[in-house]
Amino acid sequence: MDIKVSTSIMCADFLRLGEVVKELENAGADYLHFDIMDGHFVPNFTMGPDMLKSIRNMTDVPFDTHLMVYDPERYVESFIQTGSDLLVIHTEACKHLHRTVDLIKQNGAMAGVAINPATPLSSLDYILEQVFMVLIMSVDPGFAGQKMIPSAIRKIRELRNKIDSAGLDVQIQVDGNVSFENAPKMVAAGAEILVAGSSSVFHRDMSIREGMEKLRQCVRGEKI
Ligand code: DX5
Ligand code: ZN
Image (cartoon, rainbow, N blue to C red; front, top):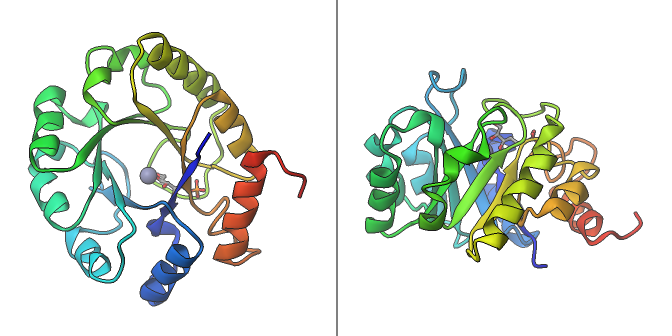
């Protein structure tokens, strides 16, 4: 299976953001993952559309934008205009999910829906066939450097079965503590897009290139 890596920009050194983006591009990042926070749906702040716009001007790597904000329909147009190829909204934060998914698609981006660790898969039953991707959160969102909630693996497997038995073509992304140790289990359960943050590509003990290599080796099951 072709596993994609979406690298978490909130884990980058913001003082040298441009260089980091080039390093990610050279290391073969499949997406740049932007964690957008409103200080309300999650207790933190990170970045906004202007930052994406600046980065859009310097790279062609697709943008995967994860909106951790209430009423995300308010920001769909602005985050697509500033370069998001894939826009992901939380089921818990959006009152009218079909309308917002449609808005994302009408504006020319691919739509994804995210669910928190305690949100049941059944919340996706009536939206699954409308989306490009489901994002399974393996930590409560808001901060890098947290520990995976173990039930995430079972949830990925159950979602994989649901997608396959319905004959759908929906990608599964996983976000939160995608470490060298956890990533192979996530992939074995059916995840196809890994969000790589401080647990792998931005690991404090290695360079971005080394972190990316090691992550890919781990998911291929190679000895390291
Ligand atoms: C969590 C963020 C993640 C985070 C993942 O709210 O959505 O993207 O940066 O990175 P680590 O590996 O630090 O969990
Ligand atoms: Zn994220």
